[in-house]
Image (cartoon, rainbow, N blue to C red; front, side, top):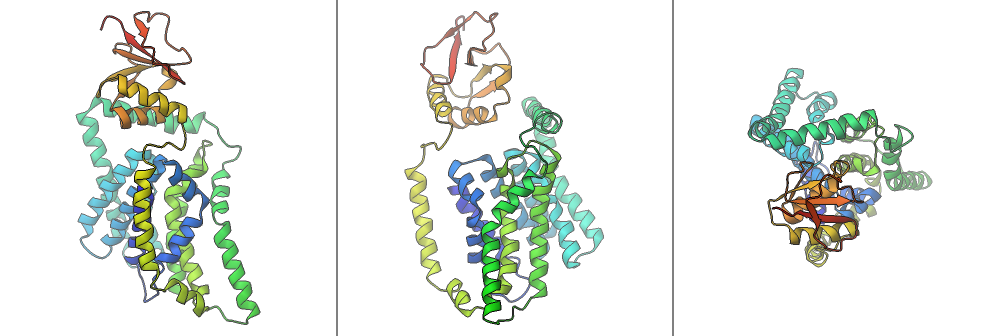
Length: 377
């Protein structure tokens, strides 16, 4: 819920900071479109890692767009740091933000191509440099990054298959656009019936194209792998919503009633009211899982038994269970490893090796896992 509120606020900030001409505020319309995407409602209800990555991606994009106006290098540095955080959240899918500077040049021609090269290089440098630093300071961090690259990146390209077609992710994007598409078609038909001429603003078309290209850069690279999930496109959806809002603006400008509706002052107190309700709901539903019930039930019991900052052994086949790694860190600051020299051992489906007879079942009566403790430690 909190990441959803932050994402909504950042969408508004990005659009307000990117006004290329004197237009009505589109932020309310953009949020309506963004919330019409079924994936947005589902992912924020289920608290996926993409939610956190989206916040950092939007922060990075905001500072890139700000760099075109002032404090160029500083804004790119801040953007790179936030993009580094986005990478730590979910990996390579966050890096589509590197394309923004090129698309800005391509659509608006307001900066030189030399600046595109220099600024993109600086952005990449400021993103990668923190990775280099932490890999030099921590062997565990290096090992984790290499394991992610080999299993999640190389593995997903070479062997993992969750869909029958690489075009699945395009279909997912088109499915999200159904409601805005229906609205646009309905307004066009209504305008034709009323014989109202729809004027097209060239600047709005450019703005729409710019943000649409950004959203595509966050979606099309997913086609490289046959490991695809519809929620992978979540970080690109805010840019798609902004793109669509610029197109719809040209249509609703011909309907004074719609303009009056979106410019009505009641949106301000309503927004504050919804914000307050959302904050209350965060506390009300805090600690109440919407998925992984058995896994979380076990994690709660295990983290009560094991001290914080403990290294715990798991089976090899469990090492790619990233949600288990995340839950153990989140709720108990516990690191999971395949090293068999640790005091505790978590087993799934009795994967404990027969050679490890020095471990004894702790007896927590877990639903999914079994927790063992070494007898001589």
